[in-house]
Length: 156
Image (cartoon, rainbow, N blue to C red; front, side, top):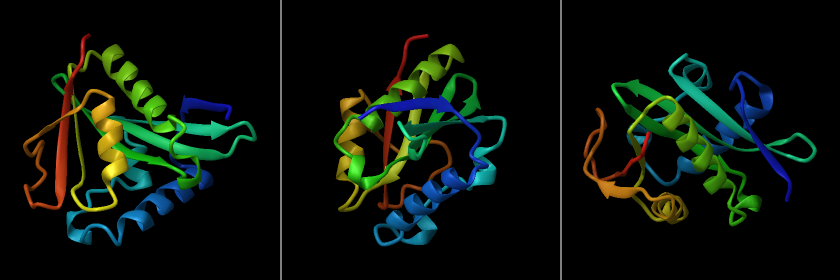
């Protein structure tokens, strides 16, 4: 499948729809108080860069974001691919784009938080295949038992 990935604003209807699908998919998996979602408006902040994957017809089919926390630390946020496209390496390509931008910004360490429940296994595989290693709680996330944390050191 032909897919392009580019930096885009999240303030678009089709990106809002992707965010809504991601949020809905997480609702049955993790209690709401342990879901740490950036809103579309928060994703439009200057410290966040959103990558959007689009199919040949221009439809938004996936996304992933890099939040720059400064001092060489970046966070992977809002990774999502439409369910019917999973298994086609789209998530891996989004992660590669995020990592490339992190290197360009001289970010030396990437971290992320994801769910730690049945249903998140594909995300764990994506991150582990991408070179991320499990770690303890990062940033200001609580170590609640509902989250799994990953980190990756990257060359600059």
